[in-house]
Length: 85
Image 1 (tube, rainbow, N blue to C red):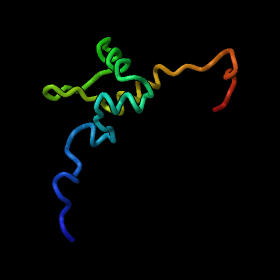
Image 2 (tube, rainbow, N blue to C red):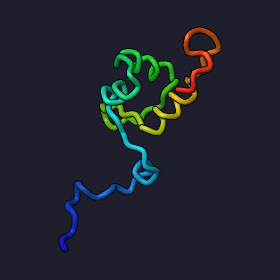
Image 3 (spheres, one colour):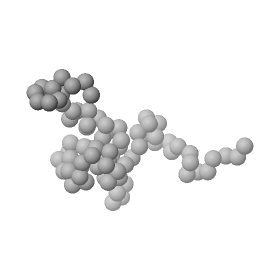
Image 4 (cartoon, rainbow, N blue to C red):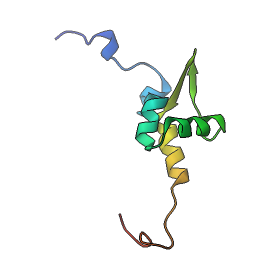
């Protein structure tokens, strides 16, 4: 059995060990279903932490999931109130 190529091995980073993945701003915006400018505002406002590698700005998938969880609210009135989606 041959050894996996270097690019296929999991790097020894906290994100890799925790199951989190580093995403580009475009990828994170698609996952959050928002425009990339909205994601940029979240980053600029300090609401969404990022990892900066040189000129690259990357978003941890765990940080994005936590932000979405913190921002999620339950409808108390209107057509979705009481909906168990």
